Image (cartoon, rainbow, N blue to C red; front, top):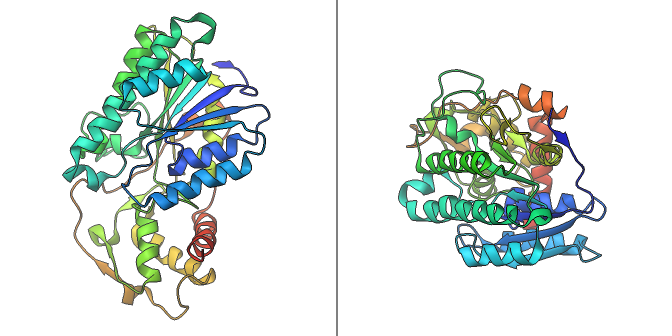
Length: 353
């Protein structure tokens, strides 16, 4: 069993704090007494920056006692990262910053190498340097990986012990590389590391490049949506609050020294219940109607087009979460309809201004 330590009164660094999961996590961490949050994000224009600024404003509004510090900077710049660590001396690092998106990685590989490889390397180096400072050392680094590392895994559900050597997109390859880099630092420098393989996270204030958000925008505009692989792809949709709960549990589980001398663990964080795209869209449309986002009379058949599979896509994602449950006592549990209903309500309010 890992060493169990609380995180009250700790300084927690959240990279990518203007992003979907990072922004939601920073907001949630403010509920813990005494926690100081340092957030860094370059607020790039991969998707509309207005949504990123909205997330940051939500954090600032909730931060009534000055426990949140925001740094507008790029983790690919090593000096920025080292200066940040020197100034704020984080106890816990939650590294969520990354260039996301499978399809975008096909045409824009440079962005992924800069953010996901060089950026992660800089975070690891800063943690290593902190180990030389004794009592100021980082106590635990948690980092985001992805279900995409499993590629077209034939064994289901996906287990953390499965082979992940055949990524089918550059995005997946960079996430696999992040895991390998983190493992080496956990072994060489005894930095406690926990990797988190997220499975299709969705919810309020989510990423506009993700399918459910793109579908919603098109449906609200009365436009047809394309369902790749004839709508047969299955995804393990995981509600954002369940992900945040898992992260909070994992913060306190600091990996001990393993049998190979490493301080490293990795967990799937998924809903353990894949749903095909056609079913997903049907539920989404029902909840968008209930929230008043789209007209009640719109029909699934009229607004969907079944098309061939897209490059880099996998047929299914399906998380085995027994390890997560065994070690934390928690597992993602929000039903898809409930999660989409919350998203639809938020979208209605957000787009209303």
